Length: 68
Image (cartoon, rainbow, N blue to C red):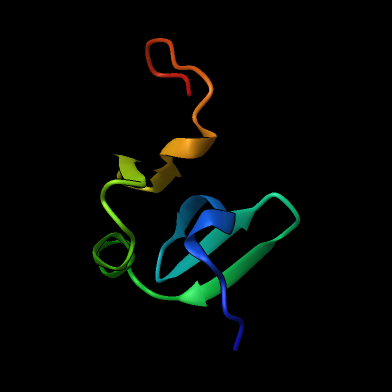
């Protein structure tokens, strides 16, 4: 078990039945659905940008077309 603060998360990537939670230092893999993770994360801080990605708005530097 690892306690991970929301402000450490840069983005979340879906891996079928698992999620890869990325931070600046490393990543963590957990057994959870994207829907459950989306419900857990604060909607003011995180946004689902694709069926496979949830992004921290604080880490967003730029976007153009389909590229973040």
